[in-house]
Each structure stands twice: as structure tokens, then as C-alpha cells.
Amino acid sequence: MSKEALEVLGTTAGHSLQQLSLSMTSTQLSPSDMANFTALRVLYIEGRRLEVAGLESPRPDALQMLDTLRIHSSRFGRFIQLFVDMRLENLHTLGLSDHSDDALDGLRAFMSAHGNTSPENRHTHELSAHSDDASNGLPAFLNVHGNKLLHLTIESTHAFPTLDQCPNLLDIKISSDCDLADLVSNTPHKSLSKIVVSDIESHIKKIEFDTEMFPALREIQILELGWPTTERAIAKSRFVRFAEFLLQKNIKLTNSEEKAWTPRLKTGKGRRAS
Image (cartoon, rainbow, N blue to C red):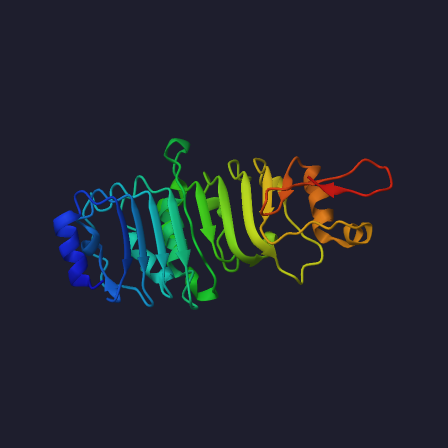
């Protein structure tokens, strides 16, 4: 969709349109381009190299009903700055995915803006962060909005800021292999209850995670996890060791089928997943 077509759509249907999926041919958008979408609740924007054309003050009611925002772009880190100065009072879901080194630029900006609301205004935030340069815009966003987030999806934990900017987060999803030790909170995070990851980076032999900083955590799900079935495999498995450590903290380690590891009775036949 061109910028001109988006303007026509906003003028004719922006007052009633609740869901919008855009594949943009225009590379630059400004806050004014979204001003007429006052009823929009779900917004998905895709574009190879989206940019912010200008940072003029948005209308007070711009995207006032938006609860879900997903951006798929090689410049999403920069592009997310488009939303920093919007109120986004109803935001609860954010998804960011990238194709280049710009991925984290705007993620931090978004979380700064929307990561710190009171519990009654908690919301969901889905992000995909992948590269080192993608963090430039994220801090500002998080400072403004991070407190609104309940659910967050990112692509990578590398170069990701601390979770302190999202104090009301309930769960976080990481869609690539990761190191759980990269998930950091400088103060105890009192609401995060679930972490979902694709897999743990293969070079990590002993999985480290500071459970003391996440007192509400009850489940870590590893989607690519396959539980071992033989005594030899069980004895060598880093996931079994991690699961039994977590069980001592009242936290489940599960796979994609929600199957958790449960130690067997000491009968000489090992342990199992159940």
C-alpha cells in the first residue's frame, strides 16, 4: 500500500476500522499518517525499510484504541519511534521482527514508553529483536510505554534491555535460540510468570538463570525440547539438570506439548517427562 492509499483509507474508514494489516510500498510514515485511525485495535505493518518521515506531535486521539501492534521490517527499531509520543493507553500486544542490524533501535524506545503502567493498565507487548544496532529507539519507547506491557515476544535476547522497564509483564516469548542469562532484571520482577523460548543456544552446557529475580515465575517452555528417554541420555541431558533445579524453585520446564519433566521414584529406572 502506498502512503497516499493509506491516507484515503484513514479518511474514509479510520473512524470504524478495528483491524488493519499493511504491506507498505512507501518507506516513510509520520504520526499524521495514522491520525485518522481512531478505532483501530490491531495494527500489523510490514515493509522492507520503513522509516519515520517526521516526529511532529501526534493528535491526542491517534491510535487511542490500539491494543496490538506488530511491525515486520528491517528498520523496525527506528520505525517504532513513530509511536513513542502517542498515548497508546490501551496497548497490550507488540510484535517486532527484523531482517537486518537495525532491529533493536525502536524496541527500547517502545518499551520505555509502554513498559511501566499500573497493574490495572497492564498490556501485552510482542517484540522481535535480533541485532546490536536495533536498540537505539527502544529505550525511549520503553520509558514511555513499557509499564503497559503484559506479554512480550522478541526474536533474540542479545542487546535487549533489562526487564525493569516492563514491570507488569506476565510472559515473554523469544523466537530464536537464546541464553536465558541474558534476561536480566535489576530488581525482583514480581509479575513475570512464563518464559517461552525456541531453544537454548547449543554451546551452553550448563543453563544458568537467576530465579531469585523472578519470584512469580512458574514455567519455562522450550519449544524445541525433546525429553530424553534412556538412562544414559537422561544422565547427560542439560535440560534434565535444569528442570530438576527449577523444580526446587516451584518452576516447571516444559516442551512444546506442555510436557514437564518429573523425576521418577528412586526405583533404578530413572526419571521421565509427564
